[in-house]
Image (tube, rainbow, N blue to C red):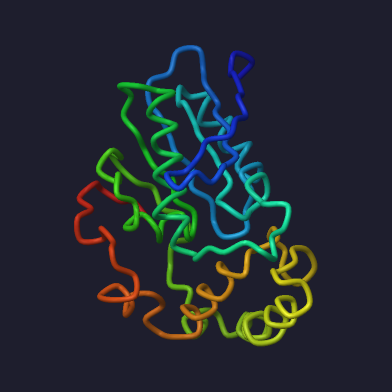
Length: 221
């Protein structure tokens, strides 16, 4: 574990937005792993997992989606974006950065929650050899445990809208234990989680273009 190099850097997405990334490189790497975060989880949350992987020969890249943690703009309330931008712009940039740092190595993608959901928005998804999904299930509140429903509905219908009116973004800490969230993340995420199909019913129109039908790499979920 002592011969693992850690490099923090900024990588622009295709639209030029600066993304905060962290690369862990062992002395003799044999493969590469991209870790895509769940909503509101900063890249540092995965540090111990990334070090464990690097200790077993993986070059590992973790990163913060736009609007989150190290990729948060100074004025989050003024940020204009939509939730799928994470898949269309940020995840492809992170994959390109990992491949550039580990040329020729096979790539595994670990997607946590939305980090797995948004695989189908990546135009360069074919550069990934296989996927491991963690907690990549439906966000629809009606499919969750009944004990969780009251708190979840209060977040969507009470806390979230109040936080947007007061601050212009979702404030992290307290009821929402994740990082601060941009308005564009919350509003789309809320729309999906309040309906049974989640985002599936929007794939034919609102969420075009996408590549969900083109993914052939094996997925273990």
